[in-house]
Image 1 (spheres, rainbow, N blue to C red):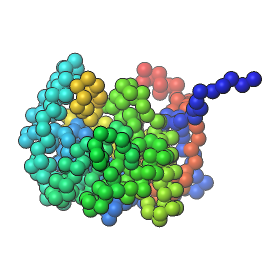
Image 2 (cartoon, rainbow, N blue to C red):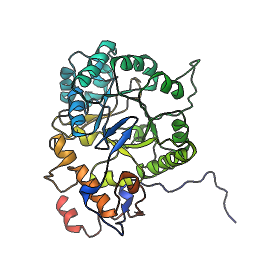
Image 3 (tube, rainbow, N blue to C red):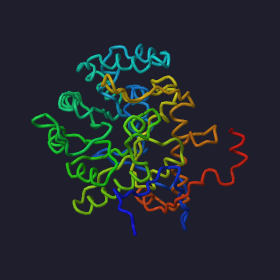
Image 4 (cartoon, rainbow, N blue to C red):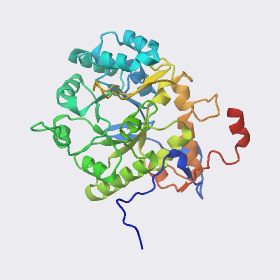
Amino acid sequence: MLSPRFKDMRRCYGFDDVALVPGDVTTNPDQTNIDLSLGDFTFSLPILASAMDAVVDPSFAILLGRLGGLAVLNLEGVQTRYQDPGEVLEEIVAAPVAEVTSLLQRLYSEPIKEQLVVERIQSIKRAGAVCAVSVTPANTKQLAPVAAEAGVDILVVQSTVTTARHISKSYRGLIFSDLCQQIPVPIIVGNCVTFTAASELMRSGIAGILVGIGPGAACTTREVLGIGVPQVTATMDCAAARDEYLRESGRYVAVITDGGIRNGGDLCKAFASGADAVMLGSVLAQAGEAPGRGYHWGMAHPHPALPRGTLIKVNTRGNLEQILLGPTSVTDGSQNFIGALRTAMAVCGAFNIREMHQVEMVFAPAIKTEGKQIQLSSQG
């Protein structure tokens, strides 16, 4: 006799659980096309830099833009709260571990200044870079029009969990279909991890969707709230929503895997899972040009009793160009991410990102340890 079941669970997969299967046909890495399209913009690198204060400031955004990627500036961070954010960044990275949480709460309680929003956007635009900025849903109605007036090119509306239907005390909350009509730029929304939520968000008219809840190196959502879905499964589910929406509407919405990527192997698996691009945080915080000075911290949460996000030391591993394009000086996959992607695509016989989506993956939790006893013992 079968015992009654309270609920069903399915097996979900993260980057360490899977491996890519080589193709029957291979090609040269330099023949692969990895372009990313967002609205009318095309980027030669399918890389977005996270809208986190340790990762992106205007100078970093300009530099990544010149390399071919897209950096997202946090409009609710220190860059728009302080005229001289450099002093604040120095205070954060110098703080004792026991005092970091309270310090972040205090620093991020400073009001956002609309004039600084305008100044930061215009400084990026004057340099000729595509300007993308991030706002939370709660502040979108206030800040999105200011950003649009300043000339922003791409708007990201981002929170830990974002859905198309949100019940609140507000008479009329944020409605993404209205926002897409009011702000005439490509809009990326996140984060989500399910087929249904992704489908509903795509039908609102957005240009891209961010996938990932809690996998980031500095994020503590999974520990504090117990919420999240491993990134391979989350990306595959949202990619399935993208493909179904494409069939029903003829419109393609970019899926962007956000968080949990530590090395070139993880990045390649994200694309094989269905990503059109990836958003990197701690990886890019390790660049010498990053404003975090070798440190990284999560998005500060204003709730006084439930702070989320922690300060971690990531060190500086090289300059931004070396991390993304090489040449690499290490063997752990933490440099030359684009070289890794092109090589994996070539070995798997994928000439472009959409063909990379079709690459076979297998459940292989021993893929990084099989036969590596000497390497593992030397690391220990």
